[in-house]
Length: 227
Image (cartoon, rainbow, N blue to C red; front, side):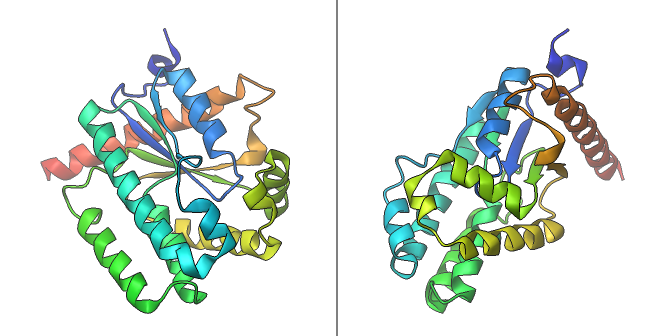
């Protein structure tokens, strides 16, 4: 029996990993995909034409960056479900509007007109009955100190030059966002509770929780349909 069958995780599941920068989304994505024999949907950082410009000038490029992310994530979400599921997705489309665009608007690095344009487009594309939501969103959380240590460890130049206050702001906003998120079931996991780098068996603890959450949510959906 393979791990997917052992933990009763459907072969067509779509699982999204969310969390602030440096929390280990890509590591979790790859570990789950390997364990379940699923495909991955990874955030394409290196090919993003706006990211370096954005880190050098938030006000000039925040709107461009958010529109780019929205278009790319929407296309990827459609591709995943057209394929038939069986994917682990690195970062959700919901974080863009709930955290990043909102933060830049409130901090004055995105104009009110740009923010309303972005929100209107997001709502028309995503907040409809036709948009395919994931079966489960795994939210990775941890202390601010642990997350900053991880950012320093991976050493991306554009992140190293970003003020510490920005990462602290992001940490708080993520916590506020997840506490009100309701677009799909959520499984919260603290990064201090597992070690996917040095302990391969720790992924099974995650898989057990994933299987339970997905089965419970699908039972709830069936009950709603039969009412």
